[in-house]
Every structure is written in structure tokens, then in C-alpha cells.
Length: 226
Image 1 (tube, helix red, strand yellow):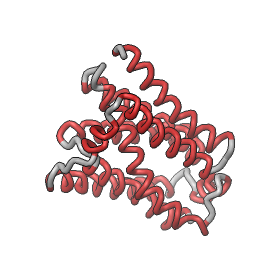
Image 2 (spheres, rainbow, N blue to C red; image 1 turned 90 degrees about the vertical axis):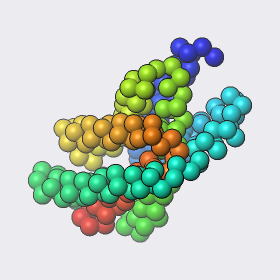
Image 3 (cartoon, rainbow, N blue to C red; image 1 turned 60 degrees about the horizontal axis):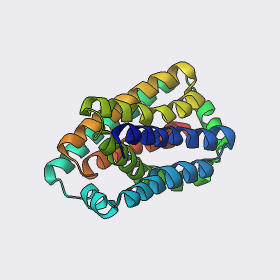
């Protein structure tokens, strides 16, 4: 496949991620539908089928889980700890101002996230969502963009599409202005994780960092929203 064709295919996959989140949260107003469409079909099935079609499924899977050593794990934990603290602090400051926790909870309850489902949702978000997003964006998408673009371009483009569907979530929960600002922070975080892959190519460093960031979101939900 030519480089231009590879780029177009990857762009289509990236747009599919945003469309799946829009369909699940805006059209169907269901976290379950969103998880099936986004996580199962886009983040899991698309990379697996594409790698199988390339004939490199086994190679890519082993590469993703290759041990980066203690430095990769410690670096991921350190970055994740900073994100964890930043998310909790930022959420606390935000909820003291114009954004009300009741509004956020009401929006999330329309998606089906009741207090009874908060624990399984939290476990899924921290353990599964963080892993699938890293395998998708910093694994599948970024690695293939690097075959057609410079690293700087690949990181920016993959981070843009990674943050794009977060804009939908942010606008619904926080309004247009704050939603756009939060999406900008998501973009910068995605770019940070993209650059981390240069030194730690396996999934461990970015996954651990992402896991702690999502854990920060869970702490916010338990502390102030639910």
C-alpha cells in the first residue's frame, strides 16, 4: 500500500473513533453503546484486523508487550502521578467556580451511569479504557503514521484525533468554553504520551501513565460528582 493510501486509511480509522463516540453518547445517550462502538469495534477490532491483514499481528503484539525495563515503568508512573494530581486539583478548582457537579452527574446519568454502576464503570475506565486507548493511539495509529510522516507530524496528528472525541465529552459535561480548554489539555497529554513512545516503545510506560490519569478522574467522580 502506498504512503498516501496508508495515511488516508489511518485518517478514516481516526474519524471512526470520533463518530463512534458521537453515536454512542449524543445519538444513543448510552455508555454501553459507546463502549461497544468505540472500544470493541474501533480500538480493538480495527487494529487486530488491520494487523492480521498486514500479516504482522503476532509481531506487533509482541512488540507492544516487550519489556522496556524498570526505567520505562518508573517514568510512566512518575508522569502518571503528576497527571493524577493535576486532574484532581484542576477538577477541584473548576467545581468551585462556574461548573456544578450536579450538572455533570445529570449528564452522566442520562448516559446510564448511575451510582450503582459507578464501581464497575470506574474499574473499566482505569484498567480497560486506558489500555485500549494506548494500544489504539500510541500503538496502532502512531506507529503507522510514522511510516508516512515525521515523528513531530505523527505525534501531532495522532494527538489531534485522540483529543477530538474528548471534545464531545467535554462540551456535554462542561459547556463549550471549558470543554474546548479541557480538550486542549487532552491534546497536550496525548502529545506527551506520543513522545514517550520514542524512548519506551512498549505499552507499559504510557499505559501506566494513562491508568493513573484515569484513576484521577475516578477520584473526582467519587469525591465531588457522585
